[in-house]
Amino acid sequence: MRGATQTKWLVAATAIALAATACSTSSKSSDKAASGGGTIAVQLGEPQHGLIPQNTAESEGAEVLNALFAGLVEYDNKTNEPKLRVAESIESPDSKVWTIKLKDGYTFHNGEKVTAQSFVDAWNWGANQDNAAEGLPFFAKIDGSADLAPGKDKKPTTDKLKGLTVVDDKTFTVALTAPFSQFKTMLGYNAFYPLPKAFFADKKTFEEAPIGNGPFQMDGKWEHNQQIKVKRYDNFPAADGKAKLQGVTFKIYDKLETAYNDLRADNIQATDKLPISAMGTVKGEFGDRYIYKPESGVGYIGFPIATNPATYGKPEIRKAISMAIDREAITKTIFSGTRVPADDFINPLIPGYRKGAMGDAAKYDPAKAKSIFDTAGGVPNNTLELGYNADGGHKEWIEAVANQLKKNLGVEVTLKPFEKFGKILDALGEKQYSGGFRMAWSMDYPSIENYLRPIFSKVAIENGSNYGGYVNEQFETLLDQADQAKSPEEGQKLYQQADDILVQDLPYIPVYTYMSSAAYSKKIKNFDTDAQGRMNLDEVELAG
Image 1 (cartoon, rainbow, N blue to C red):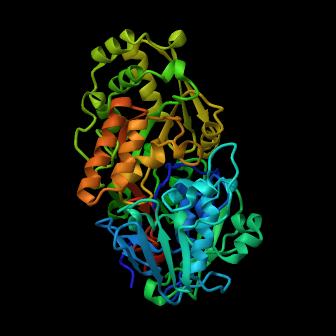
Image 2: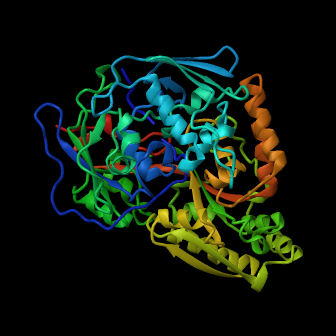
Image 3: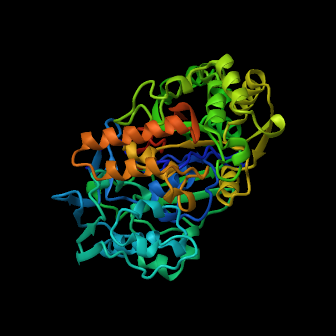
């Protein structure tokens, strides 16, 4: 039986999308059932693109996929330790060759049995660069990945990872190119979900109405900018915990204030993102139904180092910007204490985090910042631009950063709002935007490695979340050495050395770490969020 709660990432890993679309419901969406069942509505931002697990690296799509799919492992909500879910066992004698056995009883929502082949087919698709899946970097450690992802202007020489072998319906093996002790921990991330045969027959239809193996199934197609409806999958294994609700509607908002007002009016029953305007009053209004606890996210100011080296190419300029930002004031004044000043690239929830790891770079020192900035020669035209997505409650803190930079560095700062989170991701991914940018990361899986390689490695530039185009060969070497370490302790030390490289180079500036700020109505109970900020919808029940 599954535990009381479960996990996400942002991230996945992933970047954090505090996004959504204008939509205020006027009708009550909670229907009480006599014994279990009932339906509710919850807040969501418009996902970036089609709902394919291997191609979803943002929080809104991942929220829906978390309801539709079950992974090989899940993460304990209190300890973040990986726990077996669809997998019966995941074993390796050397951290290089892994044998994965599946439990009985899991089927896709169209009745197809979940087999070892379901995972192997999904991973082969995600690893193939022709498919341009955002989850591609997560398969880079599997033997043969270079044949499927040989790099820009090259063609894959195969469509199958030679490191994957199906032994029988319930068993497959995974051979990595080198030992990687974190591999089992990775496997709860959505890039490693299985795919049914229907996906390969019609991908366009699938991404609008995915067929998963989780506790909920789609109830119709994704209604863009309006809603995504799911309903309980009654053939989900009881041992994994069938969903208690009959259905959930993800109402899509583009303003968190609108969603919050709908929550207060009980037009929706839960949100895991609150507007800044609610921070000062939400505890008094919702009491125990307000959730406030550490979350795995880190909020950054990012720099397009590759596309705008004239402005952001010098680490001294980036350090000056970092030291000119008053993190304490932003977290207390703008976020009413619902964020914590960041002092490491690693979130405090993750083993390997080091308090104060950023040293002077995270200390507010306007005089020193100005001195470093001037000594480095400043920036062209003495002007900076900061971009942010306007659908996620970021305007206020980005404005505060802009004012601090103006005051402390003497530069002109202009702001560029993007309508939706997906829009700024698209602009950055296509190298069309060259200003500084707001970004965030929530874990795909609870490992220090997940705060390094997916965001700052070379492989993540074209197929991942390295939107700054940052490259440091020493950083790459340390990551590889850490991956192949003989013990978790040795690996952690090497990952921390890679973290030190980031502290030195500052490709992004960590500004704050997240606290989970969620609230729910009196109509429901057993609501919680995990360290990735996802809702535990399969365990929610109507109250009374």
